[in-house]
Length: 270
Image (cartoon, rainbow, N blue to C red; front, side, top):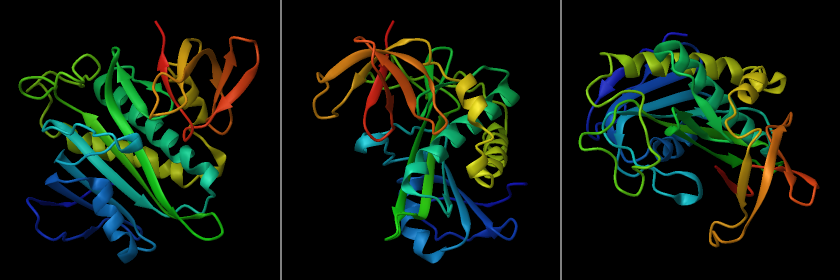
């Protein structure tokens, strides 16, 4: 699938370019949030898959409403799609995107990207990508639509990252070092893989890749059970990823549990 799009700046209304019978794509210099744009558009595209990509976001969001820094030098994009799946499988889309990003990064840069369960991508110990999946459900519990938002730090911003994230955030290239057109090629590679995965959702062809790229399995973790109370946590050992992309853990008392993405956040120890 070749990604071709008209490029727009500012707040000019979108002029969509049809790539094939089911996918539309647009690129802009700056937006508030690519996820929010697609939420507004979802009702006008009840069957189409749509991609919105930008070089900068002014109102990017992460999980639990946290601000997602989206400076110039990145690739920020969201995909609207309409998988006929239940709410329990929404995390599969996040895992599919994480796997697609890892594949594309390795192919284009040679870097081994790793996945911190379930939605963060790390390169050389630094977070270079975050993924946020949102959706609307029908009365029967299946998805009306899903929006998979992805933010990737291609280059370090001029002057570096803000103090609150400078010890965690990283980029694929130093400031000014990214090859010309890299963002377009990265977007195309990721979307090629992701759409291929989404068309085979029940077969989960990316499951083994997701497991292989995990930087959590085999390590001690801190499990934070409440975002409003970060001191409410326990430590455990991450044993593996199950067939539904849940994190299998062994607690200190020897009991086992499976974490789902909506319940907790984790921190890798050591």
